Image 1: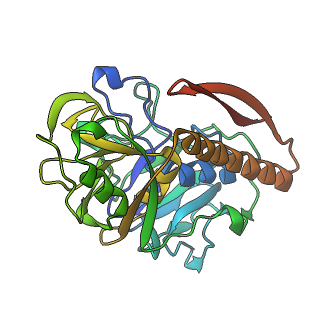
Image 2: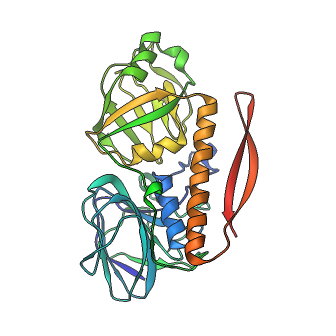
Image 3: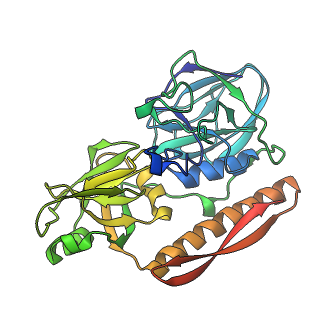
Length: 342
């Protein structure tokens, strides 16, 4: 059991998301930084689908009633265990009665805490993720608050062993991000100058930036006519541009449909950069080809496999097996490999 002594600004239980229900109006939710969440689970010895705590800007103070094993990743939040500093991107044991505390994010925006066995909250539509706007999942569908008690599950896959992630696998968080974008689906509703503005302009994250979406400020993106369309599907990373011409990047808690024109979509592997950006940080967009997007996904999968293999070597267990599948983008077939621990 874990008791929340003091709660951070916005801490929720998240996993890989509530996929398969968008047709019924249920948003996906899930970890906004899928890389940091996935790596935390690998370090903790959990399967990818285990639920973690996602902390935003400021972290929590937690007391563990029993011995546990945990991992931290993502934003550097000055973690301490019984007032002793804890290294970022590391896994370590926690003795019964100990207090694990997090401060303000010195680098990045969102920190993750994975517990060996996962955070045990009821599944809703196959996921433990919290979607606060509908009070679904997690702890009563809300952010954590002081006095909450969390159960530890039994989803562990590998033995817990203290370790620190090699630096080559750790993202570097700065004051600006460059995001690769697939153009469309409504790029034909923007002027050529508007599209050029998106890819040549410099934007700043406004104070309206949360798990639903990031509103940006900068040069106006011009439409040919109206900015409104008949509402259609809204994917993660979609860049909506309302009538005022300022782009909005949709994130994990986005709605399932939207009625603003979408000039492009930030590719999945780059959304982890946006998730770790704060209000005031700079954003630039660069156009990406279909082939480039698939290659970025392949590279991300390879990083997970490499981290899992490194972790297996630390514990002396078997390394990963690889499964392949194909995907089709605009009529072109690509091969993708996914690694699974044995």
